[in-house]
Image (cartoon, rainbow, N blue to C red; front, side, top):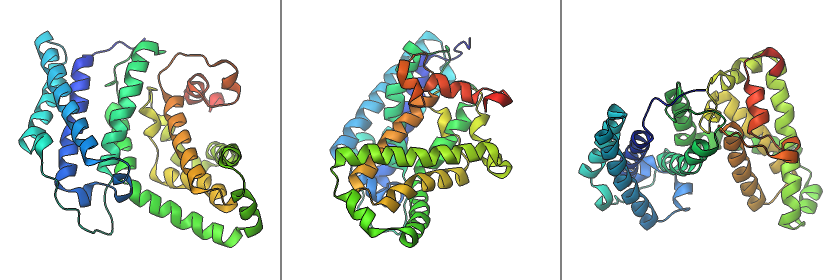
Length: 307
Protein backbone atom coordinates (compact mmCIF):
# COMPACT_ATOMS: atom_id res chain seq x y z
CA UNK A 1 0.00 0.00 0.00
CA UNK A 2 1.34 3.43 -0.97
CA UNK A 3 1.05 5.80 1.96
CA UNK A 4 0.28 9.44 1.42
CA UNK A 5 3.25 11.68 2.15
CA UNK A 6 1.46 14.95 1.54
CA UNK A 7 -1.45 16.77 3.05
CA UNK A 8 -4.60 16.63 0.96
CA UNK A 9 -5.27 20.24 1.88
CA UNK A 10 -1.83 21.25 0.62
CA UNK A 11 -2.36 19.34 -2.63
CA UNK A 12 -5.70 21.03 -3.23
CA UNK A 13 -4.21 24.43 -2.45
CA UNK A 14 -1.36 23.90 -4.92
CA UNK A 15 -3.66 22.65 -7.66
CA UNK A 16 -6.15 25.50 -7.31
CA UNK A 17 -3.49 28.14 -6.81
CA UNK A 18 -1.68 27.23 -10.01
CA UNK A 19 -4.97 26.88 -11.89
CA UNK A 20 -6.07 30.32 -10.68
CA UNK A 21 -2.80 31.86 -11.80
CA UNK A 22 -3.19 30.28 -15.22
CA UNK A 23 -6.78 31.55 -15.36
CA UNK A 24 -5.70 35.13 -14.70
CA UNK A 25 -3.10 34.85 -17.46
CA UNK A 26 -5.86 33.69 -19.81
CA UNK A 27 -7.76 36.90 -19.05
CA UNK A 28 -4.68 38.98 -19.81
CA UNK A 29 -3.78 37.23 -23.07
CA UNK A 30 -6.99 35.61 -24.37
CA UNK A 31 -6.04 35.67 -28.04
CA UNK A 32 -2.81 33.79 -27.35
CA UNK A 33 -3.65 31.51 -24.42
CA UNK A 34 -7.27 30.50 -25.04
CA UNK A 35 -8.75 28.35 -27.76
CA UNK A 36 -11.17 30.12 -30.07
CA UNK A 37 -13.39 27.03 -30.30
CA UNK A 38 -13.42 26.38 -26.57
CA UNK A 39 -14.23 30.02 -25.67
CA UNK A 40 -17.68 29.40 -27.11
CA UNK A 41 -18.38 26.73 -24.46
CA UNK A 42 -18.18 28.97 -21.38
CA UNK A 43 -19.02 32.57 -20.49
CA UNK A 44 -16.81 35.25 -18.95
CA UNK A 45 -19.06 35.34 -15.87
CA UNK A 46 -18.65 31.59 -15.40
CA UNK A 47 -14.87 31.87 -15.71
CA UNK A 48 -14.73 34.71 -13.15
CA UNK A 49 -16.92 32.81 -10.71
CA UNK A 50 -14.76 29.72 -11.04
CA UNK A 51 -11.65 31.85 -10.57
CA UNK A 52 -13.06 33.32 -7.35
CA UNK A 53 -13.89 29.86 -6.00
CA UNK A 54 -10.41 28.61 -6.87
CA UNK A 55 -8.67 31.52 -5.18
CA UNK A 56 -10.71 31.27 -1.98
CA UNK A 57 -10.30 27.49 -1.77
CA UNK A 58 -6.56 27.73 -2.42
CA UNK A 59 -6.05 30.28 0.35
CA UNK A 60 -8.23 28.40 2.85
CA UNK A 61 -6.78 24.94 2.18
CA UNK A 62 -3.23 26.25 2.06
CA UNK A 63 -3.58 28.16 5.32
CA UNK A 64 -5.07 25.15 7.10
CA UNK A 65 -2.30 22.89 5.81
CA UNK A 66 0.38 25.33 6.99
CA UNK A 67 -1.22 25.63 10.43
CA UNK A 68 -1.40 21.85 10.72
CA UNK A 69 2.25 21.59 9.74
CA UNK A 70 1.62 19.10 6.94
CA UNK A 71 2.83 19.64 3.41
CA UNK A 72 3.94 23.18 4.15
CA UNK A 73 6.13 23.56 1.07
CA UNK A 74 3.33 22.40 -1.22
CA UNK A 75 0.82 24.60 0.59
CA UNK A 76 3.12 27.62 0.35
CA UNK A 77 3.41 27.03 -3.39
CA UNK A 78 -0.38 27.04 -3.64
CA UNK A 79 -0.85 30.15 -1.52
CA UNK A 80 2.00 31.88 -3.33
CA UNK A 81 0.47 31.12 -6.74
CA UNK A 82 -2.93 32.37 -5.58
CA UNK A 83 -1.34 35.53 -4.17
CA UNK A 84 0.41 36.20 -7.47
CA UNK A 85 -2.89 35.67 -9.28
CA UNK A 86 -4.51 38.30 -7.05
CA UNK A 87 -1.65 40.73 -7.62
CA UNK A 88 -2.13 40.30 -11.37
CA UNK A 89 -5.77 41.29 -11.07
CA UNK A 90 -7.57 38.36 -9.50
CA UNK A 91 -11.28 38.23 -10.23
CA UNK A 92 -11.24 41.92 -11.20
CA UNK A 93 -8.69 41.37 -13.95
CA UNK A 94 -9.63 43.29 -17.06
CA UNK A 95 -10.50 41.18 -20.07
CA UNK A 96 -8.21 42.37 -22.83
CA UNK A 97 -9.70 42.64 -26.33
CA UNK A 98 -9.47 39.41 -28.27
CA UNK A 99 -7.56 39.97 -31.47
CA UNK A 100 -7.32 37.72 -34.48
CA UNK A 101 -4.44 35.27 -34.42
CA UNK A 102 -3.92 32.31 -36.75
CA UNK A 103 -3.13 30.00 -33.84
CA UNK A 104 -3.58 29.98 -30.09
CA UNK A 105 -2.84 27.81 -27.08
CA UNK A 106 -5.53 26.00 -25.12
CA UNK A 107 -4.53 27.07 -21.62
CA UNK A 108 -8.20 27.61 -20.76
CA UNK A 109 -8.96 24.05 -21.87
CA UNK A 110 -6.11 22.80 -19.68
CA UNK A 111 -7.28 24.74 -16.61
CA UNK A 112 -10.94 23.75 -16.85
CA UNK A 113 -10.19 20.14 -17.73
CA UNK A 114 -7.71 19.81 -14.88
CA UNK A 115 -10.06 21.49 -12.42
CA UNK A 116 -13.13 19.40 -13.17
CA UNK A 117 -11.22 16.14 -13.62
CA UNK A 118 -9.53 16.61 -10.26
CA UNK A 119 -12.81 17.73 -8.68
CA UNK A 120 -14.43 14.44 -9.69
CA UNK A 121 -11.64 11.89 -9.52
CA UNK A 122 -9.51 13.03 -6.57
CA UNK A 123 -12.38 12.56 -4.05
CA UNK A 124 -13.44 9.33 -5.79
CA UNK A 125 -9.95 7.89 -5.57
CA UNK A 126 -9.71 9.04 -1.97
CA UNK A 127 -12.94 7.24 -1.03
CA UNK A 128 -12.88 4.23 -3.36
CA UNK A 129 -9.22 3.87 -4.28
CA UNK A 130 -7.67 0.47 -4.85
CA UNK A 131 -4.48 1.87 -3.33
CA UNK A 132 -4.04 4.62 -0.79
CA UNK A 133 -1.86 7.14 -2.56
CA UNK A 134 -1.52 10.90 -2.71
CA UNK A 135 -2.43 12.89 -5.82
CA UNK A 136 1.21 14.00 -5.61
CA UNK A 137 2.45 10.42 -5.87
CA UNK A 138 5.82 9.71 -7.52
CA UNK A 139 6.03 10.80 -11.17
CA UNK A 140 2.96 13.06 -10.94
CA UNK A 141 4.95 15.92 -12.44
CA UNK A 142 5.74 13.83 -15.52
CA UNK A 143 2.10 12.90 -16.07
CA UNK A 144 0.95 16.46 -15.44
CA UNK A 145 3.44 17.67 -18.05
CA UNK A 146 1.91 15.30 -20.62
CA UNK A 147 -1.58 16.41 -19.56
CA UNK A 148 -0.50 20.03 -19.97
CA UNK A 149 1.07 19.50 -23.40
CA UNK A 150 -1.89 17.61 -24.85
CA UNK A 151 -4.39 20.22 -23.65
CA UNK A 152 -2.45 23.40 -24.33
CA UNK A 153 -1.55 22.17 -27.80
CA UNK A 154 -5.07 21.00 -28.55
CA UNK A 155 -5.54 23.31 -31.55
CA UNK A 156 -2.34 22.14 -33.23
CA UNK A 157 -3.21 18.50 -32.56
CA UNK A 158 -6.71 19.03 -33.94
CA UNK A 159 -5.37 20.71 -37.08
CA UNK A 160 -2.91 17.88 -37.73
CA UNK A 161 -5.45 15.12 -37.09
CA UNK A 162 -8.19 16.78 -39.13
CA UNK A 163 -5.85 17.42 -42.04
CA UNK A 164 -4.78 13.84 -42.63
CA UNK A 165 -8.10 12.18 -41.79
CA UNK A 166 -10.01 14.55 -44.09
CA UNK A 167 -7.55 13.88 -46.91
CA UNK A 168 -7.94 10.12 -46.58
CA UNK A 169 -11.71 10.35 -46.21
CA UNK A 170 -11.99 12.51 -49.33
CA UNK A 171 -10.32 9.76 -51.36
CA UNK A 172 -12.15 6.79 -49.88
CA UNK A 173 -15.59 8.18 -49.01
CA UNK A 174 -18.70 6.61 -50.53
CA UNK A 175 -21.39 9.34 -50.65
CA UNK A 176 -24.44 7.02 -50.86
CA UNK A 177 -23.33 5.27 -47.66
CA UNK A 178 -22.68 8.59 -45.95
CA UNK A 179 -26.15 9.83 -46.90
CA UNK A 180 -27.73 6.65 -45.59
CA UNK A 181 -25.98 6.99 -42.23
CA UNK A 182 -26.77 10.70 -41.95
CA UNK A 183 -30.45 9.93 -42.52
CA UNK A 184 -30.52 7.81 -39.36
CA UNK A 185 -31.57 9.34 -36.03
CA UNK A 186 -28.78 10.35 -33.67
CA UNK A 187 -29.72 7.70 -31.10
CA UNK A 188 -29.04 5.02 -33.72
CA UNK A 189 -25.95 6.68 -35.18
CA UNK A 190 -24.27 6.89 -31.79
CA UNK A 191 -23.89 3.14 -31.02
CA UNK A 192 -22.79 2.58 -34.62
CA UNK A 193 -20.14 5.28 -34.22
CA UNK A 194 -18.95 3.79 -30.94
CA UNK A 195 -18.66 0.35 -32.52
CA UNK A 196 -16.77 1.58 -35.58
CA UNK A 197 -14.37 3.85 -33.72
CA UNK A 198 -13.69 1.34 -30.95
CA UNK A 199 -12.97 -1.39 -33.48
CA UNK A 200 -10.43 0.87 -35.17
CA UNK A 201 -8.84 1.73 -31.83
CA UNK A 202 -8.73 -1.92 -30.73
CA UNK A 203 -6.92 -2.95 -33.93
CA UNK A 204 -4.50 -0.06 -33.60
CA UNK A 205 -3.85 -0.86 -29.95
CA UNK A 206 -3.01 -4.44 -30.83
CA UNK A 207 -0.58 -3.12 -33.43
CA UNK A 208 1.06 -0.93 -30.76
CA UNK A 209 1.88 -4.08 -28.83
CA UNK A 210 2.84 -6.25 -31.80
CA UNK A 211 4.82 -3.92 -34.09
CA UNK A 212 8.22 -3.07 -32.54
CA UNK A 213 8.38 0.40 -34.08
CA UNK A 214 4.93 1.32 -32.74
CA UNK A 215 5.71 -0.21 -29.35
CA UNK A 216 8.63 2.19 -28.95
CA UNK A 217 6.09 5.03 -28.86
CA UNK A 218 3.38 3.19 -26.93
CA UNK A 219 5.87 2.05 -24.28
CA UNK A 220 5.87 5.62 -22.98
CA UNK A 221 2.20 5.21 -22.07
CA UNK A 222 3.06 2.05 -20.16
CA UNK A 223 5.91 3.80 -18.37
CA UNK A 224 3.81 5.11 -15.50
CA UNK A 225 4.34 3.07 -12.32
CA UNK A 226 1.40 4.61 -10.48
CA UNK A 227 -2.10 4.38 -11.89
CA UNK A 228 -4.60 7.16 -11.33
CA UNK A 229 -6.81 9.50 -13.36
CA UNK A 230 -3.77 11.49 -14.50
CA UNK A 231 -1.63 8.54 -15.62
CA UNK A 232 -3.51 8.05 -18.89
CA UNK A 233 -2.19 11.39 -20.15
CA UNK A 234 1.31 10.00 -20.59
CA UNK A 235 1.43 9.49 -24.35
CA UNK A 236 3.96 10.28 -27.06
CA UNK A 237 2.83 13.01 -29.43
CA UNK A 238 3.00 10.69 -32.43
CA UNK A 239 0.77 8.19 -30.64
CA UNK A 240 -1.70 10.95 -29.85
CA UNK A 241 -1.85 11.99 -33.50
CA UNK A 242 -2.09 8.43 -34.80
CA UNK A 243 -4.66 7.23 -32.27
CA UNK A 244 -6.96 10.21 -32.57
CA UNK A 245 -6.69 10.12 -36.34
CA UNK A 246 -7.44 6.40 -36.63
CA UNK A 247 -10.42 6.76 -34.31
CA UNK A 248 -11.74 9.81 -36.15
CA UNK A 249 -11.19 8.34 -39.62
CA UNK A 250 -14.09 5.83 -39.66
CA UNK A 251 -16.41 8.47 -38.21
CA UNK A 252 -15.54 10.94 -40.97
CA UNK A 253 -15.38 8.27 -43.66
CA UNK A 254 -18.86 6.97 -42.86
CA UNK A 255 -20.36 10.43 -42.52
CA UNK A 256 -21.65 10.45 -38.95
CA UNK A 257 -23.22 13.75 -37.93
CA UNK A 258 -21.03 16.27 -36.04
CA UNK A 259 -23.18 15.97 -32.92
CA UNK A 260 -22.66 12.22 -32.79
CA UNK A 261 -18.92 12.60 -33.33
CA UNK A 262 -18.71 15.17 -30.53
CA UNK A 263 -20.70 12.91 -28.21
CA UNK A 264 -18.34 10.03 -28.93
CA UNK A 265 -15.28 12.22 -28.28
CA UNK A 266 -16.70 13.21 -24.88
CA UNK A 267 -17.53 9.59 -24.04
CA UNK A 268 -14.13 8.20 -24.99
CA UNK A 269 -12.38 11.01 -23.10
CA UNK A 270 -14.25 10.20 -19.89
CA UNK A 271 -13.75 6.48 -20.37
CA UNK A 272 -10.01 6.91 -20.87
CA UNK A 273 -9.68 8.80 -17.59
CA UNK A 274 -11.87 6.27 -15.77
CA UNK A 275 -9.89 3.29 -17.10
CA UNK A 276 -6.67 4.58 -15.53
CA UNK A 277 -8.24 5.88 -12.31
CA UNK A 278 -7.16 4.42 -8.98
CA UNK A 279 -10.53 2.83 -8.21
CA UNK A 280 -11.18 -0.52 -6.61
CA UNK A 281 -14.75 -0.79 -7.86
CA UNK A 282 -16.03 -3.85 -9.67
CA UNK A 283 -18.42 -3.20 -12.54
CA UNK A 284 -19.71 -6.72 -13.05
CA UNK A 285 -20.70 -7.67 -16.59
CA UNK A 286 -19.69 -4.24 -17.89
CA UNK A 287 -16.05 -5.29 -17.47
CA UNK A 288 -16.60 -7.76 -20.32
CA UNK A 289 -17.80 -4.95 -22.60
CA UNK A 290 -15.92 -1.80 -21.59
CA UNK A 291 -12.31 -1.08 -20.68
CA UNK A 292 -12.57 -0.29 -16.96
CA UNK A 293 -10.01 0.17 -14.16
CA UNK A 294 -9.59 -3.40 -12.94
CA UNK A 295 -8.84 -4.82 -16.38
CA UNK A 296 -6.80 -1.87 -17.59
CA UNK A 297 -4.61 -1.81 -14.49
CA UNK A 298 -3.89 -5.47 -15.15
CA UNK A 299 -2.99 -4.55 -18.73
CA UNK A 300 -0.54 -1.93 -17.43
CA UNK A 301 1.12 -4.40 -15.04
CA UNK A 302 4.85 -4.81 -15.57
CA UNK A 303 4.73 -8.37 -16.82
CA UNK A 304 5.36 -9.24 -20.49
CA UNK A 305 2.41 -11.65 -20.70
CA UNK A 306 0.04 -8.92 -19.50
CA UNK A 307 0.88 -6.38 -22.20
